[in-house]
Image (cartoon, rainbow, N blue to C red; front, side):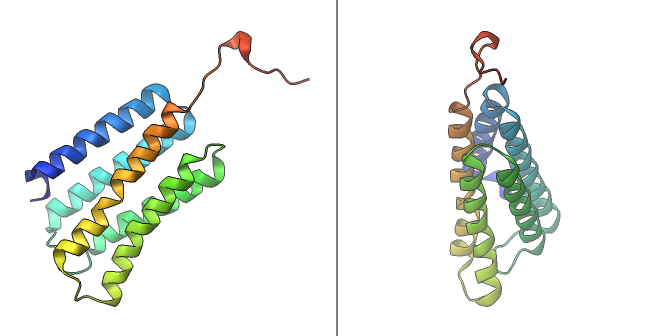
Amino acid sequence: MIFHTLWAYLYYAFLLVCCGYAIMRGGRSEYYGAGIMTLGSLSTLAVARAFGSSWSQVEVGIFAIDVVGLVALIFLAFRSDRFWPMWAASFQLLAVTIHTVMLLDPQITPWAFGTGAVFWAYPMLLALAIGSCENVVLAPDRRVRAG
């Protein structure tokens, strides 16, 4: 199964570190981003375990999860004053594009399809972590007051 490989353990450790850091250090956008990425990853794991994932054809459940994640990240990018959600949405768009390419040309090898679809989660998490690192929370006496 998907969770029985070393790469899967490394990914979920990276997910835990990046999302945990975002929750501890980030603002509202980082909280939502961490939630979107965690929910997407856990939903993908559940679908892959329930229905199996051979990556030899379009994984409809995983594709649907990726599309919902893309819509959520685009919405976050529009609503946020931060720059990192645009990067995360762009990386998620690349993951969705890999699924779309598999729809158009099902002769893509399972290794290329699986690797291409999963790879873009790492830069997304990295964008979240960098965005959290750049989040500056000013002390109450240093905030700019309007009017």
